[in-house]
Image (cartoon, rainbow over all chains, first blue to last red; front, side, top):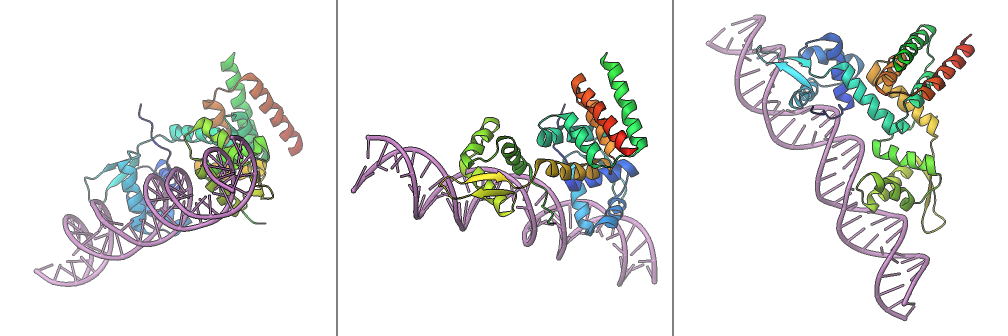
Length: 127
Length: 127
DNA sequence: TTTTATTTACGAAAATATTCGTACGTTTGT
DNA sequence: ACAAACGTACGAATATTTTCGTAAATAAAA
């Protein structure tokens, strides 16, 4: 298994767009990015080219406007990022992260219920 | 209130040491760092000097070996990092982060119990 | 066809983070 | 007093990430 380096913040923004919108051109992605921040078109282009070199993205170059797709799964990437984050910030303690996340973010009832359901599932499996 | 920029990974390593060991000299910190990775002494020194400039650290320069302490609280810093992380990686959904964290990290029973207790507390407050 | 717009490729500047060498002062040991 | 060890200050080299200008190719419009 080849371990892919941590995507940078900018790369993650692009991955998020591709995960949510599916196959997209540079312009598609750029238009979404522009909603939230100033950015030049060639900047987005360059980033996506680099991500393609790094195998973070696939591209179909058969038409003039190349079409990019994420080449890493959202779940797996999130998992890697969470693991690293827990190690860096909470010395490896997942429960500390969980409590910090629940404490500061005013979580609503629906979310809490979902988490409780999830906890029960885990406990069932652990038996 | 002055918002302090996100500490880099290296800075976070140093903060973690200071949070756990309390007031320390550069050498103290450096010896801990060395256990986990190659690092030159002046590199650690420089980092801590920069962190002092940025007001991340306090220092007492009254003795020859300056004594540094963290100038940001662990809880608050972790909170800021968690918030940013949730925004960047989970589009603001704390519960998604929680489930991802619980799912991948094989959490043991003691930790799960602690989390359940914590959930109950939150629910009580929300009433 | 000629011009205009769109897109890729590419190099390099700018910004940020990390690492280290060296000078110089202070303390410690001989 | 002298040398060795230790510590800070500081500039600069590296590395990494982000940004953008410009040229060349292709497509679309006039």
